[in-house]
Picture 1 (cartoon, rainbow, N blue to C red):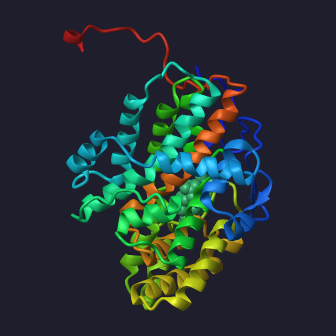
Picture 2: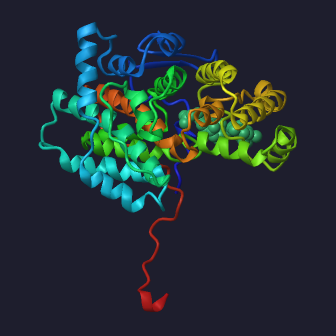
Picture 3: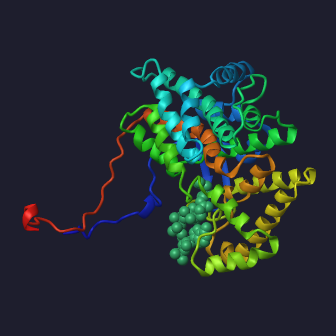
Length: 384
Ligand code: CMC
């Protein structure tokens, strides 16, 4: 008999799972801080390496801390040959995020002492993952384009090197800023679904690789990290700016969700979406790529209509994934790499949360409310 005194929080809405010093989201006013620093300041003035250090260590690095951290990341960019074999085998038929998930799992086999669960050993693992995941994603991108793999270039920053390995060109100042911006904005975001699943796995005292694999898997779906790819797919399906209003009206009439809109926590404009949009506008002044211009026009018209239809009445505003597609397109990141790029940036948030949670670990073990029958009589198979 179902217990009638049970309150179920669907999707764990409103449930706090831990104290954290990593990230604060003010969903009512559309504000976000990493370790107390406003996201706008980090987006404008910092870089991904510094933000990664901040998230992992709780303070901005000194010059020498920064140099040591950057060197560690640069030294760990290469991946074992087995990774390229996996990418070569599966890149033609498997989604890049799924290949990334498998490759990260395989990286655990190259860890020389999995029994060492010290803080230092775990931080080394985080550095390996932060450094190697962009290399794997770029490699997947190269194979999917039928182009030769490009080895990392030590003189480039973490994110400029990623774009270089993906496109074969050292990015100019604008492209380097935009990819770095996207990594900063995706680095951390509280106890979202993928971070939570990282913590659930980690709470069993499973290792860093297993926990990050859980995060990558959870990120994949279109309600979470897959939304930017889905939003761009929608913009491409709209095709021409003049088709936008009819497409959105029809989609809403058919009870479809508009990808890149809405958020469990933000009931105001996602501050990350605002930042992406502002940088995209600056970038548009310097590019003449008509396909990006068209995508942006579609996005702006869709946003305007959504504002009339849903934003003001239901608090469904653009989230970070809405303007990401046009921006990534402008710097030649293909849409099927959006989610693994997200994962490559978010890995720092996953690890930072995991290490924070492990300081006061408790196994996650929620309850479900049984609503089926009890004491059902067993009937042997030949009498059913
Ligand atoms: N388009 C149209 N209607 C929407 C949308 C949307 N994007 N999002 C929510 N709604 C409606 C939904 O249909 C429901 O309406 P009703 O009350 O009439 O049934 C109401 O808003 C509440 O929806 P919900 O699913 O209960 O709300 P949630 O807090 O679980 O939703 C969400 C959060 C992100 C899953 C949802 O907004 C959504 O599906 N958005 C599209 C996918 C997306 O952009 N995801 C990226 C999120 S941000 C980046 C990240 O974390 O990965």
